[in-house]
Image (cartoon, rainbow, N blue to C red; front, side, top):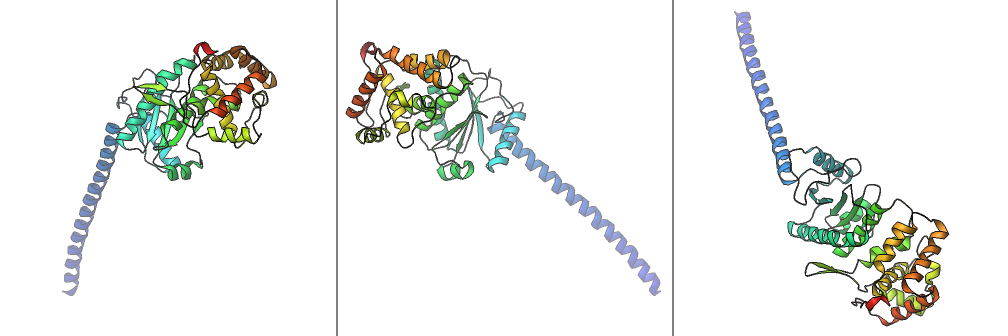
Length: 337
């Protein structure tokens, strides 16, 4: 009797166990289904809000796409790029494509709209003035949320920088459009030559566009900026390196190097010679000469364009630098004389 009760109870427990197993499987399936639904929803949300994007160093978006947001039918590039950034920086960037640029950002909708406007107008107006090579690969721009995050993730304390290996510009949302335009010039120069160039040329032209504005939707350039007092101090203290010296050097002087080379391009702008100087350097001199001969030929180019020898140019350069103020709009000389 006791054994029969135990046996019956065992049967009951067996049924209970079976019921528990079935319930467990049902719950497990339900949980797995919910997880997949969440992933699917997350993926769909991203596909709707974020278009395909090219990988920083491996993949390219076809250049035939217009400046509008790309179709999200194929999200392989988008997933690859977004995943690459998430793995590298542990940040979930918003990603979009605008014309020739792939953009990852953490900016507000209003701010990224403004930055895209500055980017597009600068590219469409300035690139054709100086550069001849049609871009085939997109440039990447990554905007971190703020300076601390940018510095922490990249290790850079500058306002921004350009990496030619990945064709990527790094900065943050509120670094200013001057930073954006400065680094865009580096990207443009990089696209138009694979030769080693003088640092003073690369930084001089780029820093020239640190101080420029959009006026009536047109880029207005030709201004002194915050670097001007540093140059004037170097001249007063007789620490200024003459043009014929720094134009021969591959690297710039510390402290006031940027100020010196920036004002050289201001000087060229005043003389209406900045465009022929840039184009002749990039497309005529750079392919033919290197090392000291490139420096010599560049000085000869400057003398030819201005119509004076390098010592006379240096004297005029210093005289102008002494008389100008910070953040001053410059005046171009009629006829470039």
